[in-house]
Length: 438
Image (tube, rainbow, N blue to C red; front, top):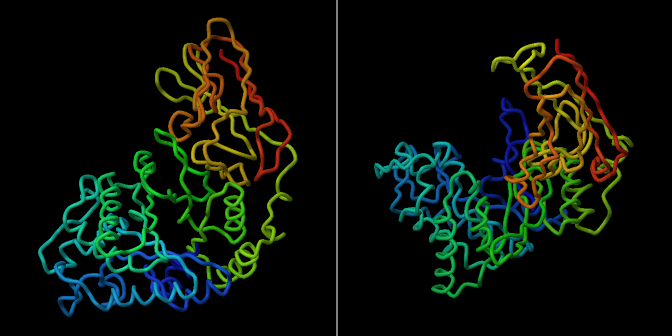
């Protein structure tokens, strides 16, 4: 999947590669470009207003005034004809469109046609609160129009909403799913896959596929009761370099999932390079090209940085430890997998992170005077974001000495062979820190 969003030049440059291809719709030129390089999927988003987009074409609702305010009781035939033509052209080229039934981004950011300043109906449903309960009739009317106009095509799949994880309730997601099935039955349309970007596992278990917005290739989602697994994709990411895109595309292949090329702010040369020299060879079954391979920049030995996080005396952070206070030590792997959401420590780590990697490969040893309490904390959210990995009391990124007494202290953290750098296993490493309490 290749998505043209969002720019491609600095903000002060009048050129905008995404807008030139009619994002958040798309263009026939864009379809021709990506299919030439063996790519076969992209995204359409249809909830928008024409004032902040680029004119009458960019409004699903009827244009009511010269200053482009819309009538929420009517539809814009030019818009829907354009959508129909684009999807039909994509079908001839073998392109599948993922249609976001409702785009929460303009709704969240005050750019919704439902905001009073954009319509003549005196409707002011502006902001994300409307997404938190059942979908109002206006939302279901819009979704029905999307399904009726696009569902006649076989090369369409649906996602409940762009960034549905932000605020969209299960009632919205499952209400859209049920409405799609009704429209398909009424119109005699084929059954279309319906997926979600919600982070609600109850919703995920009741749809056809699961999508994420993240920078790393996803694991296949499995959950629910009874347990089910769903096709899984990343359909949007932060801006990535061509090398980073390719690594995640190939990593997703290995996991049996999908990672989309979100063009983001790559310039035209980078976009073309990623397609021609990266995604096209990938689509043709070739191995990862040498320019994208990361292994040579990974060290052979892991490193670990053990440092004083803070000293606390009388509930205040202080520069030196005191008797009766606390000391907190941090252990940061210098290379390899880190904590929740796989976020790398950019200060130390020049390798890509991994999703859900509590410090299960990190062990502590220590020495302290008698009577001092020692505990481990910061478990990488093993019981939260990393629900499939059990918590352990002897694993954590921080060691805490409580009720300090005079004497010498040391703490040592070791990586016991479970650290890697972009798939390359690293040799064990350890780090130590000492301090003295007067």
